[in-house]
Amino acid sequence: MVQFSRGGSVLKQSLLITLLSVFLLGCSTSSEQPVSQVPTPPYKGTLWIPNTFEIIKESDPTRFDTLTKISDNPRKMFDRRNGWITVTPFLFEAAFTDGQSIEVQVNPEFESAEIAREIALIYLGPIGKLPAILRQDVETIWLHKGKEPFGGGNNNLLIHHEKGLEYIRGGILEEAFLHEASHTSLDPYHYNSKWEAAQKADGNFISTYARDYPTSEDVAESFPMYYALRYKPSRISNSLRDTIIDTIPNRIIYFDENFADLEAKLPLSTAH
Image 1 (cartoon, one colour):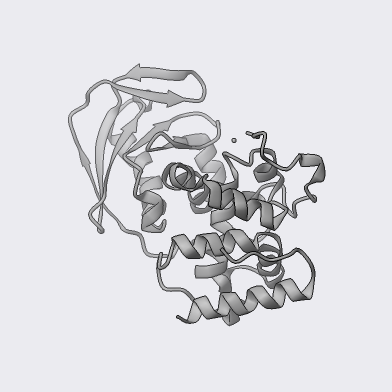
Image 2 (tube, helix red, strand yellow):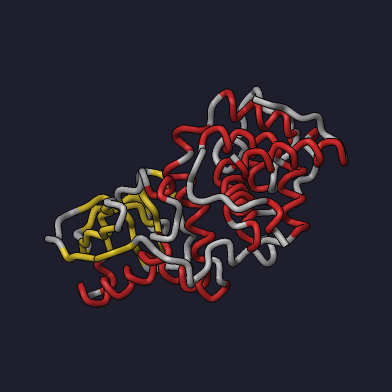
């Protein structure tokens, strides 16, 4: 892995050369740098960075295809209001045009299969806009009422509908799924020695959330910024672009080495 010393223009020029060449072709551990020695990250949380609500646009195509009702049977689901519950949810199978299928489990508190279907459809289109790698380990979706936070992991995406409506009003629903699906499909594979080396070489985190939970939130905070930089550069500001490059250059290289072609990359020069 190429590593960069921290510092001003030399770092930026070196990384830009590396980036252009590629375009063209939650919890601490004893080995982590003490928080007191880590510079203040540029953002509190990447979901709340101003003007990042169009990393994925409402008008972008979705790979979601069909939603089919299947027989209802008991399921164990996690609900942030009540912990683990066993209920008989409304069950559906969501199919995607790239061959993936996800079982959608809708809490029976939604009262009817028709209402459950209507609510599920709100979220499946946006989920289908995610890069395929973020859906690869998603086997189920848990959908509940409530304003509790979304969640990822457990081969699942956890949705609380009132929080989802809040994300929709803020224009950040797709970006929330970028974060949570990173937990589901990236976390199990990328908290490793090479990732730790990239963290150490960078000497900082993209957000205080990532800094405070470096072994559970850093990948999910960093990947959406990488995805925006590499694949949606025209949708972020030049200042955000420069901040990502300055703050997590070695993580960018790590992602480049592990994700060769998520989709067509755009030249860095289009980020205007």
